[in-house]
Image 1 (cartoon, rainbow, N blue to C red):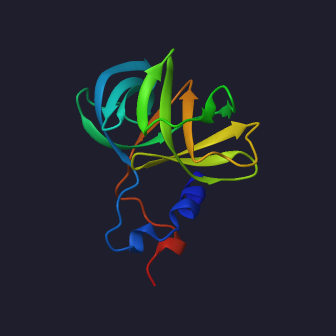
Image 2: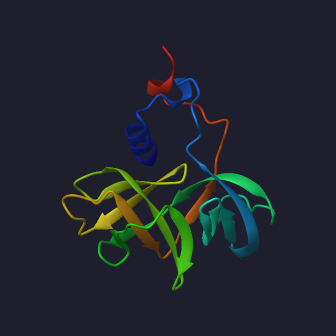
Image 3: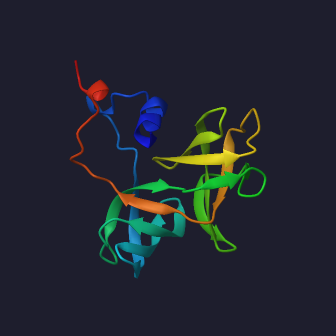
Amino acid sequence: MFRRLRQAVHGGGAACRPGHQDKSMQVQLHQVRQVQGSMATVTFESALGWGTAQWVGTRPEEGASRQVEMAVPGVLNWGYEVAETHQDESIFEEQGRVCLVGRVRWSSEDGITAVQVGSDLVLVEIANCPGIVPAQLIIRAPRVQLFDVIRWEMPLPSEQCA
């Protein structure tokens, strides 16, 4: 579902567009701590700021620079964890939460909203979302996940060039 929503937001056909730019974010990883099994907690820094996230996948090297996609798991509440803002695009921590500020690219009636944070597109599910979602949001996420971008992934059949 996530990939199909990304395809809808980006207009599909990413692999076929000349000059296509990757929709992931470059981060520098600091303080990699093993939590359980293959899960690790990392402190990361990007051009937009820094935060702490759960690393999903093979534990990265501390100090490594990686292309990642960001995810915000769970359902967030409008007015508390998600709100309108006039701040510039950024990533920071506040009161134990990772805050993402970005521009709304797409929103559905059921609260699924795509927010552009830098070059990454972050999908969030918002409970009690207003009918008209403001253009700029702040997301105060209790948890953020980072996924290493897989560069060799095969395109969906609809993404293949004609």
